[in-house]
Length: 390
Image 1: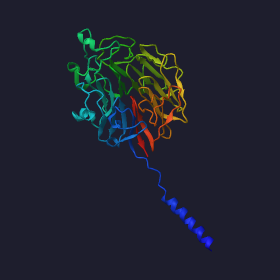
Image 2: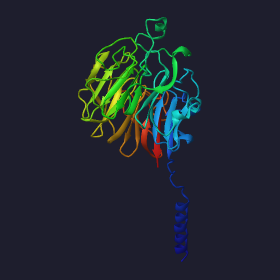
Image 3: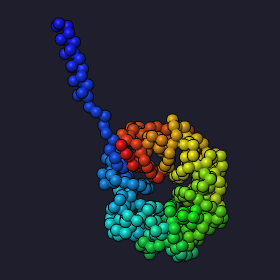
Image 4: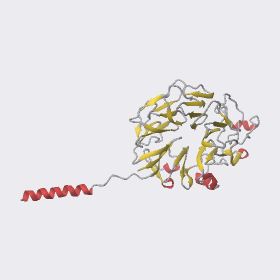
């Protein structure tokens, strides 16, 4: 009898202990970021620390660049961080930049593109607007500055506007981009921009010093009027510093332009006409960064490419991917279950883990420890943000 009572007590104790164990932490929905401390919400964060942005909790879409993250909410756009380029060329807080004109963050804004000292947006109507520095016609107004004047000293050998603190005579407020009426996507580089229209036409404007307008020519004069890129019909567009890439309906990727020491998919430096990225299976999604471009194939594989001596190489991941984002020297992919894997430079915590070890081009991607699943990702510069769902 005593033995049976002891056994009963032990069993009750086990049940009691089991009930008292804490339940797994419920994933919180919202925007989570990690990486460069120059993005002000991460200023006090240690490498590997993930910071939730409460103001962006209901985000539907993300855009990150340099020290800025902007999210589309039901009420319109809201940003965190420092301004990537204000219309008066002053590096003001983004909240100040957006507050001066509510129209710039209205619900009908469908996306932003941040260049060097200029910014563009597209609206639900299909119209595009740009504001900021217009030294080389990057606002698409049909006007630019004659570079034969002394202001030429403010432009480098690649035709890029130097990030001067003050260029008041060159700056303009928001205004429509000439001839862009049906835009569904927009992208901006250092001193050029491109818009994708609903019929697949891609129009570019601004600097063409290394062929980044895709017109088959190179010149250092302003190109302020948007013109179609010949021979291109696209369904997706991605633009970086001095180049652009598009994805067409057949899954083929074409790129044009250049980067100082990097070219893409077999292109020669200063590739002025769109060139197909050879050796790449049919792609479903495209992303570009400062040092490489990547694509997710229709089969869920991730490939990246960078120098003309390299063909696209496969990133070894444990499963299929649904999207990829490329930053300054790193990249991240989102798997089918919403898990995030990152690789590349990690000196600023770009990979979202608790070390600063480099995972190079052929390195093994590391899994970012998230509580929930990512449904969107953006990490164009040195910090990464995801929209997480439970």
